Each structure stands twice: as C-alpha cells, then as structure tokens.
Length: 228
Image (cartoon, rainbow, N blue to C red; front, side, top):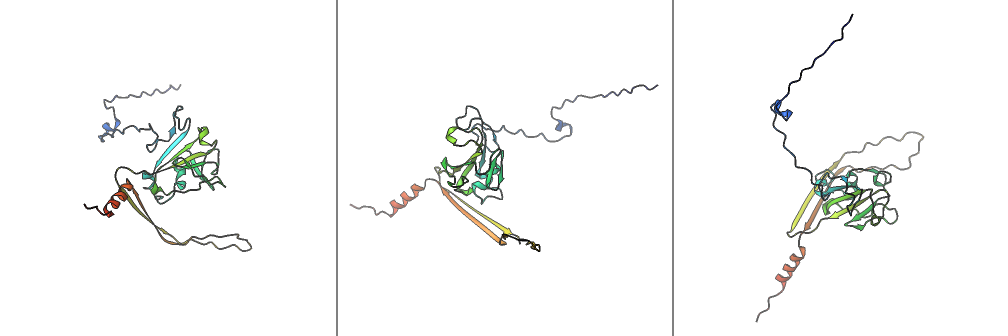
C-alpha cells in the first residue's frame, strides 16, 4: 500500500521591502514620472484624451529633433524617420500606418500642407537640422485633418529665441564596394543599379535668434552720424 507523499514548504518572512537589500545591492534610484501633459516628452506615444481638441481618440507620437540627431540618421530628412513613431512602418511609398498605404497620409510643415499634388506622398523634405521635432498622429481624425485613414505627419520648424544660437554639425560616412553578382545565362535583366563606393560628408549650419536685431545694429553702425 502506497501512502501519498506530503511536502511541506516553509517560508520565512523578510523585513526588507526591496529584494536588492537582501543581496547588499545599492538601492535603485527612483525615476520621476514621465510628464505627458502636452504630448511633447520623448516616449509619450499614447492615446490622447477624448476631449483633446487637437487629436481626440488618436495615437500620437512626438519625435524631438535633438534625439533624432543623436542617431546615425542625423543628416536625413523628416520623411525618412517618421516611421520611428509608435504604430508606424514603411512600404515602397514611405511611412505607413495600419490599414493604409504610404500614399494615404497627410504631410504638413508647421500646419501648412506639404503633400505631393500628383501622388499624395510627401513633397517637401525638411532636414532634421531645421526641425524642432516631428509630430505624428494615427487615427482619431477630425474634419480639419482632411484624412480618414493613414496618419498625419507634421514637421515643426525651429523658432528663434531671445538669444542668438548657431548650430554646426558634420557627418561622415564610408561606403563599401558593392558585390556585383554575375548575370545568369539565358536570363534577361531589365535594369541593374550600382552605388559608387567612397567617402561621403555632410555639413549643416543653422542660426536662430533675433536676427533682425543684427541687421538693425549693422545699419546703425554704417549710417553716418549727423553733426551740428
């Protein structure tokens, strides 16, 4: 006759609230909560407030230019990085959102339309050096968005402040030789494209601030002082 085995597990309580204290590890620093009140903090891709006038029931993402310029795509234009937003991807026509193609988006620059009249894709490509950030929205469109599917991508330009700022950036890249595959016998090749190998460089210089004050002061210095 076999008797059932009884296993008794004894657990001991611990006075440590943080398990890291048991192993003598330093206390993990407390991270401040992410402020997504205006949707402008990086990582605030979220469903907005239904009462929000700008994007009710929409998934919005804010991609600051300061972060994008720290990536290897810093010399790209805003249409090349718009798919970094939450819920976005890319196809042959560009950035796409679920349920639509890359030709069903709305492109704006500071709210002004920047769509291609013929194809509906992006028509004006702005370098990241001239942007404050890229604001994307998927779904939850209102009548003023003039969109029902796809998404809206708004490139926000940098604005001048009370002080003069000059931002100079340089990028360099090196392309390896392209490995050309042999054309198989008895086959027809319509077109073959090759990239030229070699170094490449890009430099951007952006100045912002109260630029009219510079012209005004230069004009005052150049104007002769009247004498009595």
